[in-house]
Image 1 (tube, one colour):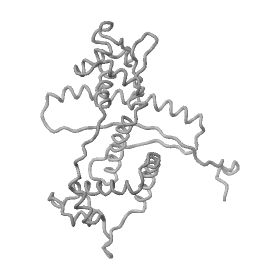
Image 2 (cartoon, helix red, strand yellow):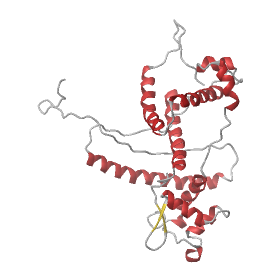
Image 3 (cartoon, helix red, strand yellow):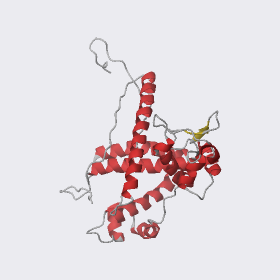
Image 4 (cartoon, one colour):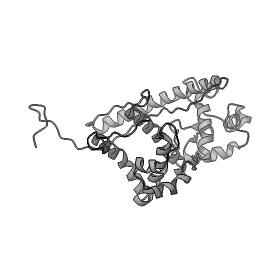
Length: 295
């Protein structure tokens, strides 16, 4: 646990202006999303209060003792009356995982890592729809290998709707390898939005707090590239990053099988990649001295 820093002379909490600037930058795209989906400031403030109480109660206990309403109020700046109202509701919201995500993640993982479902280039094979045509190496066989309680037709219809698969000219089911996040389906995309951004932000925040061994959190960024260059880099990034994700997924499945026979604590992990670009203002440098002209 790391407590807020205080000015030794005044006793007032000091907050880094660099941190506030960074938080503002992080929050802008989130505010844009919330405004586009009707999440108002008033609605958000109550959500934030609940999260402040939850995190304060779990992460900032004194000597591992339960926090009091007074301590939480001092720590978070939230009135004790609100603390008392919010505490009973804290930690009662279970994570909502759409069924297509929980089932789909296991199917995609199997399809992209099991050698039986891969071609000579280690790419997911197009699969016949039914076991009568391809035996176990069919879409029906793939679904049956994960669950006997759901029909493959139900999964196929939903995956076609979400853009996870398509049907080729030979009537085989083909995985859209890039569709780890469904192309359609707001609830499914919202789930991955929360999962992926949480883990990326948690890694970066942990590194900034300095509370444990640093997590991998790196990026490459350039500020004055042409549109064609951005397209080339986006295509190369997608190819290389998908290969990296598939490699890690295959290794994780191998380790998971071995770990099933072992005792001891368990951990979860996420490896993620992303690519982003946007227009920027650009002025050509002065050709004579290769510097930007004075304003």
